[in-house]
Amino acid sequence: MKKVMGLVVVFILALLAWTHRTAKEQNIVAQPNPVAGVNTQAGRSPLEGVQLTYRPKEPKILPQISINSRTQKVENRLQDHQEVAKKVLRTLAERLQHERDLASSEMVAQTLSIMTIDTDEKVRMQAGSYLMHAMDWKQNPNRAAILQQVSDWLSQAPNIEMLGERQQRSLVADRMELYATLYDNAPSKAEQLLRQSGEGLNQRIMTAAYNFYIRASKQKTN
Image (cartoon, rainbow, N blue to C red; front, side, top):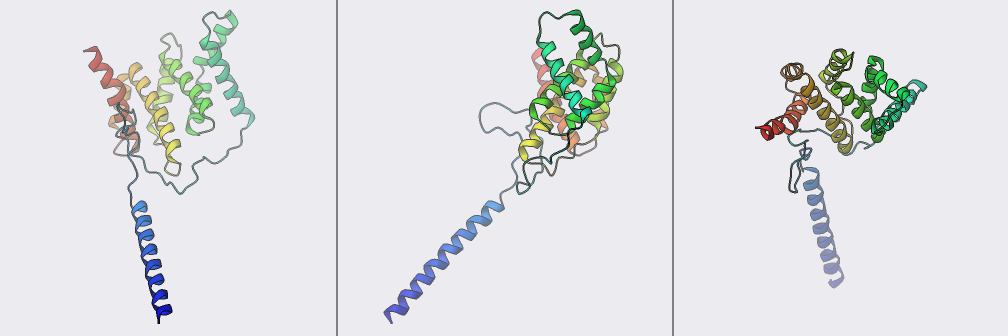
C-alpha cells in the first residue's frame, strides 16, 4: 500500500512539473514581437516607431548569393571610393576618377542593387556613403538623374519579412539615411514620395526618418 501511495505522489509531482513547464513555454510563445528600435535605455533610436514583422524561427542569415564579376567590380570601386574620400590631398587622377564615380548613373544603379541585398555590412556601409556623397555633391553634372534614381528605389517597399530582426533593422536604417539625404537635397521630391507611399512599411520608414533626422534638425535651427 505504501509503495502504491509513493508511486501516486511521484506521478502527481511529475504532472505538476510538466504543467508548469508547458505554461511557461506558452507564455514565451505568446509574447508579442518587440517594436524595432525602441530603446529601453536613455536616448532614442532612429528606428523608433517602425514596427517590423520578423519570424525568429527563420534563419537569421540571408541566403547566400553568387558574387559575379560585375558585382565584385562595383564592390571594389566602392572600396576605392571610400579610401579616396578619406584623403585630404588627392592626385589629379584620383580626383577625376572620384568625380566620375559620383556622376555615374550606372554605378548608382549597381550600388542600389547592393543596398537591396545584405551581402556584407561593411560593403553596404560603403554603398550608402557613396550614394549620399553622389546626392550631396552640388556640382554633380548628373545630380538630378541620381536623385531620381534614389527616389525610385526608395519608392519600392523592401521585401524583408523573412529576414531576422538584426538584418531588418540594418536595412531599414540604411533606407532612412538615404531618405533623409534625399530630403536635404530635394525636399519636394521626398515629400511627394512620402505622400505616395501609402500605409505600409515604406510609409513608416519615411515617417520615422523625417521625425528623427529632419524634424529634429529643424527644431535645432529654430
